[in-house]
Length: 548
Image (cartoon, rainbow, N blue to C red; front, side):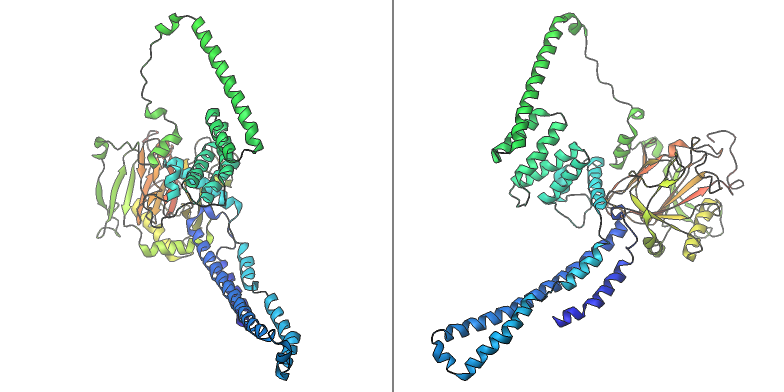
């Protein structure tokens, strides 16, 4: 006991030092890199919990030994009470036990061994994820489910591509996901996850969640999607399990009334159709369904298709125009003897990838500098002109300047040497780490004509080009896609991609509209450099027409 209590102050100091790195942060779900801190936090809690269990077991062991000793003694004494107490030592020990030792036992039983564990838990609780984090992580799972067309059972059983640490979802997990969807008035996903919870219950999985509760949510979510017949079917199943369920009783009557009403309406419509005559129906011929051209497919759908590796317009003819080469940027002295490997990723817009362009040592240093500063990534609000967070950008970012570390300056110079563009007017190196299902939906890097003040405060003109380092491999998902042209670029650690956002004329290249696909499995780290117009007047002269 004594040693456990004396260890507390040291333990608290250790915890506080461990928690300094996460004390100022929230939105854990937006950065896998920062979520790793939570694993160590939980590990510390488990250690503290085990210490508490050990202390309780020690206490119970002492009480048990005391009880066993007195049980044997009292059994002997009560067989011949007078004879037993006739021995003066026995009489003395009885007085001593009742006056002193039982009091000591009472103190032992009443002693609180929870101090250490509760203190640790209290310290760490203030850094725990919030309801917003849990909801954000749940929405991310639903987003991944839609984007990559995964059924609930695939996610629940953990059978995702590229997974190293397979994890199963319990009935409680599925039920909680369905409840969060329900609270967001998302009845489609409510149905999917309540149905999965029901499936696992039917398969015999033990759970604190009962079938009646699941069926209640399931039937209502199906009804809200307009499928009254199916909703009635599930409600009747509910009543089989709980015949006295008042809401279900009322719902059965209501659903039956609505179905009858629909039936009558359908019969009336059929009668009116017959009265109109057969001429119209015989003259009408079924037109063959036309294939929807790619240009008419909604951007969201094109974006999701590209994320899945579908709809990529890399035709043989286009591929024949893509090459790989050794690049020295017009015989730059630094690269004449050791040119870098460059390969074409796309022709229009022209996107190139540089291979082995950033070392593992540099990557780790960048991550080390960025991690304590990671904050929820923001976007430019064209209405207010200010930076704000958005649901369509799920990541955390940090900005690193060249004067903070010589390595950052070296990297900035490397980008200048390889692109030939001035870095003094470029934005600082932005480091981003994506969270659960982390993504950045379709957007432009440059300011459009309807955003004349987009980068006014910088005074360096529009964003002429984008340089993007991939600082990690991603097991599944996480591609950079260009929906308008059907291009997809996949993360490859140690490489960088580069493209111009503006034509030489200064006009925006709208084909550069791009997105970061949700990370399905893995941890995605990138860093980017947004290069601006000012300072490029002699490095990239203005073109003679808009699209030159």
